Image 1: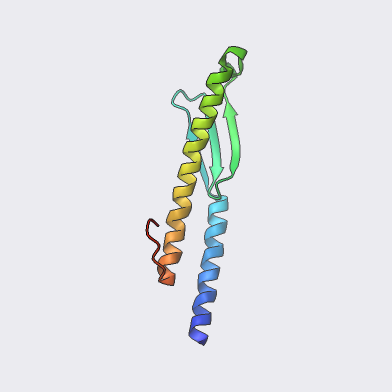
Image 2: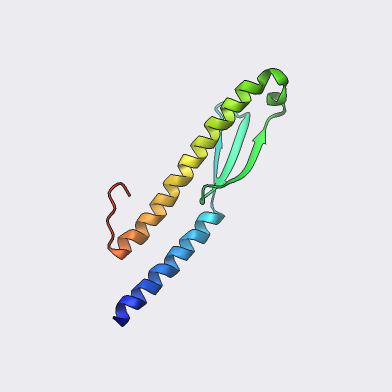
Length: 101
């Protein structure tokens, strides 16, 4: 019983370390033309967005909106993949096998 509690404590500790690592990790995505750049952290939260001056013209509004959506989706997807990969290691140590992870 004591071994199980010790193991659980170690796993919790590792999970907290991974959470901190994810929070401190930045994932960048940019549009193909380089006009829009977003940065997410490993917790899948938007940290920064940069938009080129040329995209702020009124006639570029729709294009800008589409670029923001596309680039945010890409960064979010990368952040999700990173979090899943980090979580997989903890799950493996716990002996948990979740299909798709």
